[in-house]
Image 1 (cartoon, one colour):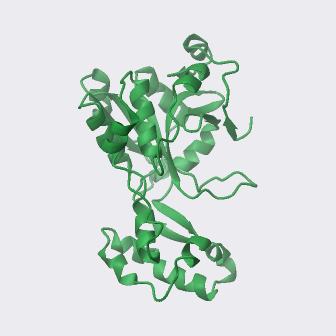
Image 2: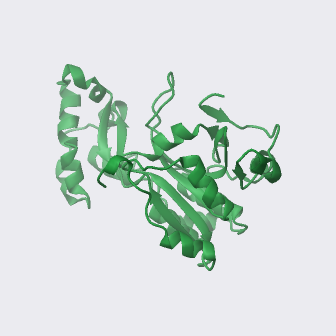
Length: 292
């Protein structure tokens, strides 16, 4: 199977009983997923879309407009000058906290979520861990850096992505928007990422008019992160072409801080034993005693 196997049909769908027999767990089988999944509801709204799918998987019926309003997706300022554009890119879309708050508001308090960070790398078998929670009734949403582990021959995506997980088995992780099956190892790589975003050179150069107002970066909540990444220096080196031979990647991209954290949010009905267990469960253990 390709590392990125898009399910555009419902051939050989696995029923719940079939899934159990091969040590897998399916919230929906493939046929149900084709019929029930909601695709991207608006620009930059993969988070709201994932929440909508999660609520639907939990049996909660709510319209997309309500979920989008509750998640409060933040938009890119595509027509803004360079620095304003970069600041908007660092927060565009939604964080896991917005997804949790959005699900709670859209469900009128009946659904809640718990986020588990996967960065720094965690000592966990992703498939087994997901299966254990999904068997208990939790619905998972992955927050992934899609700019990591890009298959050979494919271009680097332009954003992070939220996807609802509707199943796991020996083949991989089954996800919505788009409907696809990914290898567990690949998904885990994308779940383990620093909070950073690559901005393409053309998006920098096309907005570079006059002298950029770099002082705006000092007004951001995470101004220290912009300094740590030396975003100003990156831009100046990209413009001048003064790039070291071992740093050619910066000819094509500028790295900026991102508001998102990579990991998995598990959603469940608020007044349930499952939610009590989720909230009491410790964070996933770090691999090799890494520091958070």
